[in-house]
Image (cartoon, rainbow, N blue to C red; front, side):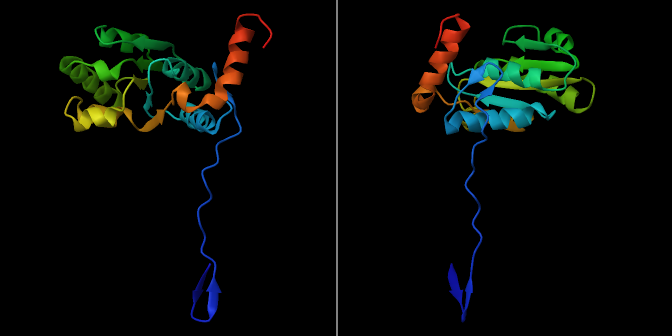
Length: 189
């Protein structure tokens, strides 16, 4: 509220970003606000065709998130994983009309980064029908600022960006994760 002259004005403030109610996405589960926000971004990303960048420490579920985005999308082709050192052209052809998961982007050599930018340019020109999903264990913006990663590569991939938080930052999810794992092992939670 503020007083303007003799009139009182109510200033609109944006509502806080409330996380969606969804508590799972693909094989990922979590009831805390942080993971529900991640699930909301992944859900929206699944309905888009734009490149997606998923960042998070080892063991946070980046690969599972990428697979779940592919599974929830309307892509008709396969979901193919590429790691640095593998034949990018071959993997991109295998992923035609599907999803190409680009693993360990933080560990790319300059030559691999150049090949990847070339492939992503072909995609943008419509010569290749593949949806790229990049995975990284570190914040790639930092790698760009350090000069260790090509800026154009980052911008090719970060149309949609999500960071999966580590478990130490979302301990409220421990009970649901334990119950989920027990269920997968055939034991009551």
